[in-house]
Image (spheres, rainbow, N blue to C red):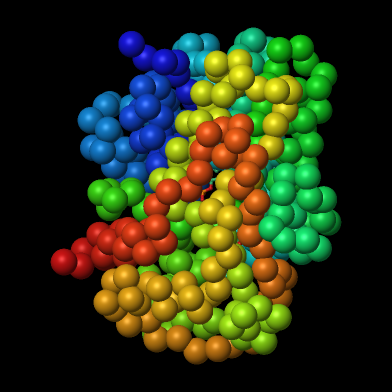
Length: 342
Ligand code: NAD
Ligand code: WQD
């Protein structure tokens, strides 16, 4: 018997596909709704191959209220997850309206239809970016949110506020925001993973493309930070571990175990890792070279941020499990799969 069913907006994307796999594995039904604006239908096929389940897929833009309403009418789901956002920080600075329109319209449409159809449970993809440059590390869920440094970051802060306010105002509505730190890696099957478009902005896709010879050399942005080796510190969370956090959060919502109508959890490992450590760890885990050089700092980077993970452990019963070395192996296996290597 199915435990319940989840409508997954942006479910064809990097984190969405991994989450659907874990939901199905945990006994949930799932429906993927995605505009394919930053993903491909083949990702849905990957999910179906891994799970052995013909997971329904609907190509829908969540900004299209009418189309969204059709999904609500057709599928009797219990909870919804919102991954359906644009996420390129630099692009959001160049074209803020694109980000405000897509990320917020899609989320407001979802909240308003959830209310109208009496479906109470909404899970939102937030980000460690809401903490900005924190004064105290690691950051806890009670750490102040600093002014966002990009329109992308602002969309995450505003969407958190929207969810908070809706859960306070509308009887029965419940929401959880998961603040992801730095998701990396891929499913161990190498059938799903991240699909960066153009030149990768994030570290791990840049590393894997450099190892594959697609990029000649990785630039490490800044080696004069006040950190042990001078490079920035981040909290790199395996995407499968991250996907499992969504299952834990959905269960908490649908089983009525929330302590208030709106909750926030950090989803990270709690372990800071430097850029240099990550590059060297990748080389060692995969016995492959990643040509790299030091370059000037990248504008907008915070020197260090990592999660306090106690609340997620205590309340969600979730913690990161996969060792970094293994995660870095899955990242390389996925890159090789994409390039048809081996
Ligand atoms: P992704 O781009 O791979 O996935 C997002 C998916 O949403 C894509 O398949 C895209 O086609 C779809 N989408 C976008 N706008 C849509 C719309 N209006 N209607 C329907 N579908 C739409 O990104 P991801 O890395 O899987 O990120 C998922 C979520 O997690 C995003 O909200 C992102 O902001 C958030 N997040 C990501 C990271 C990260 O580093 N990857 C970190 C923190 C938070
Ligand atoms: C990690 C570290 C870079 C590329 C971003 C978003 C954040 C969240 C996750 C969505 C930094 C360094 C990177 C390269 C490098 N996304 N780096 N050379 O900046 O921590 O977070 O993704 O919510 O909002 O800002 O991740 O992977 O870009 O960078 O040296 O070619 O790697 O300077 O120290 P970041 P990242």
